[in-house]
Image 1: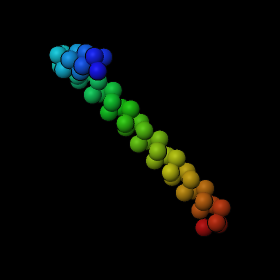
Image 2: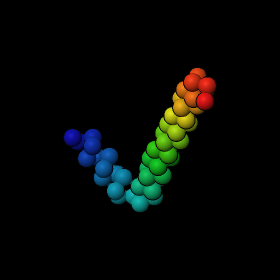
Image 3: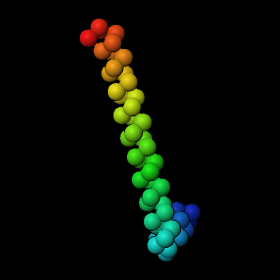
Length: 53
């Protein structure tokens, strides 16, 4: 757990680094949700087209 403790201490010690890490995590999570929505709607559209609706 020494590595985890070191990383947590480093991130919490510097507010700028904390803001950067939070911003990067939000971008990754937002990108995941965006791509998930695209894939889900593509599959739905494909299935509707296959049914002839």
